[in-house]
Length: 325
Image (cartoon, rainbow, N blue to C red; front, side, top):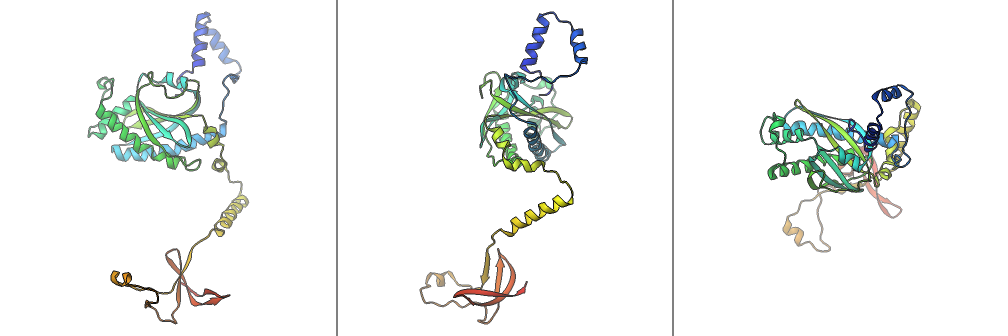
């Protein structure tokens, strides 16, 4: 999406053409000192840290998708994050071609729909590879509309690739992505209000010799709340020497020490038939495989760690640890 003009840039370009301004004026003004413009009518919602968080999340997602596509398509694939942009939905929608293949997802706790759109050459290449072809389909031979079989294949494909969102977003929120529907026309679909703020993540995709782009459109309704969560701050903590590193290790160690673990004392084992178990009554005696004076095995979880003697302490059953297994 980085090479596309925004709606404001398009309006300014049309105004300059209507007023008869020459290109030389534009060139001379570009040589002047660069001033970053700020739109007070449409202020930016997300700061640099939140944008960087989204970049890291989807960089992780791109790595997972690279491995998955390489295995599924049986060819070399590579994905990388190209851009993270905050736009209005109409700017994103206007930059899309009319005929598309877009997956509309539900991803709570994120409100609204998440959109995933693949470039058409990539879609036909993947379909051809999934059906046993070589994937070398010229663009002139690509039809304008997708068949029902192709839509069913890509619907299943979308359900497979959205699974990796869970792990990519794990450090920010526990998301539950699911495919809502597949859209094929960007002009006839009204997925969200045109003035809605969205964040568009552009990923460069290379499959064999074919290059294209995958765009992920995230609604900005409560996205800033998720990205402002305290857990996301730890994604950017930098190490500042061995002293801070030792302090961090000590904090982790203290938290581990406060963890509660189940400890069980195994007095012995016995094997009974199902018929014997069904006829057990109060007062029956079950013989164990250990002598009355044998050591008791102490297990942490399901693994034996200690052996000890059985006794009592303050009117309660107790085990005195003798040996470490």
